[in-house]
Image (tube, rainbow, N blue to C red):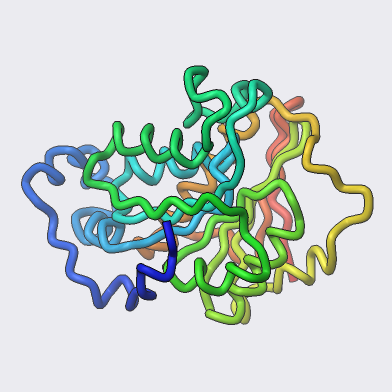
Length: 251
């Protein structure tokens, strides 16, 4: 689908998003969450989130946001499904091998939430498409395995003043933070350029992707609904081998 068909959105607060009776019933349990309530749910319904890659990490983010009632997801992921994806990419199914990943992700998300609007982009983030895709979103979630994509998307988000939930994993470790200059560091303060020797394939268990994916979805919900304490100027570092969680203060 061509992202040019969808104009940039005004802020969440300016968009009407009154809940239907069906939505109140669907989200009844989370409407009781302190400081969230119906006002928070309406903000989720009005919101648009861009997710770079919907594999092991981004797929879990997308699934949790769809379940929570985010109104629109822009999903960017190129390529066809391979057997080696199935250990961690929970939006993919064995019968979809050899077919576009983005189609499987879209199908599975709509099975969960048929009210969800999805803009499926069968491309990865690049310097050429980053500005246009970021312009469609209120919040950006970075789940890309390649630093070229991460840098391009963070640069575009910084130019447009959009917050980025930065989630990553390697082997049994994961990190999570929110990048939103000038309120935080720039992503390039942490990663100035593509690290030498980095490869797309790296060791990871699917449960690690799922763990940090759920936490990234929670950060996204907090940013949209305006409650809790998002991880701005802090980085959560998780070592699931020892179940150690460390909070690192960022200057």
